[in-house]
Image 1 (cartoon, helix red, strand yellow):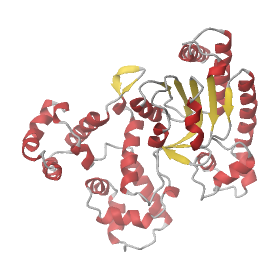
Image 2 (spheres, helix red, strand yellow):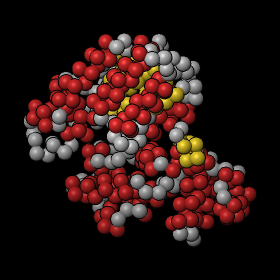
Image 3 (cartoon, one colour):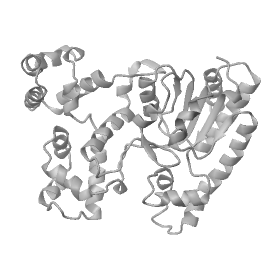
Length: 375
């Protein structure tokens, strides 16, 4: 399908001036982009105006304004300060929707914990299978501290930092075991050596979810971590198997980012109300989870969604799972807004001059960049 600039719409969700920048720095603001940019500076700089300059945000915004002016002159539509309630309307009259937004990653920071003592209490006494797994994988030092504290005791900053580091190590490790994994597990999708171990359990207990899980947990106790990991890996592949568009032989499950995403969802459910939610997209009003984004994309949209967000492979794959009619472009690495908008501006100029699809233009531009950088 031939695409021209007037078929394209670009939506920006980031703060566009100093007052919006300062608003997003406020602890009460459900935002992450500005805070993440300023995290390295805030310990030494107390004045927001200095942060505005030192974080290079002021210079970046000046460049962005120049670029979006040129993009509009080429014929594309630009929406500044996109609110989530208006997201759905982007798909009404355009064949290519480009979103420039911030992806809040799965990684924990100390500021993510609303109630650290409540999380410690859950880690100390929780009997959920996932809680038990997390507790067993905490450092011996942190395990000892959690066992010794009272239920309403305030945690010192150094313990919160240790808890943050421990949870990130677990988050970035193997698949976290959940009851849901085995509730939806189909044994015929697991290798034969694993089936041989699980089949007796399936026959005796599968009709009762709770009994099956309890029996399976008992069975797992005598195997080492390697065997445990095999079962978890294939269980998740059974539930969430996806493929990457650039390599049909490599499942999405093999990418660490997707494992982090699924593990973080487990943390968010376990500690709901006590932590900020991870793996979200930031709109101008606040952060929204992936499922909300998908619900606002029309099921009959047959165009292209260009996700100019950091580490957007997870978001892109989740959209593609639920919205099969559209094409999705994402990237595995952090995306610099100025660089991505510069590429977008030249892509529109190419589309204006030649008869080609958006994907063809995008591929041509990528090839030109690779040649320029000698790759």
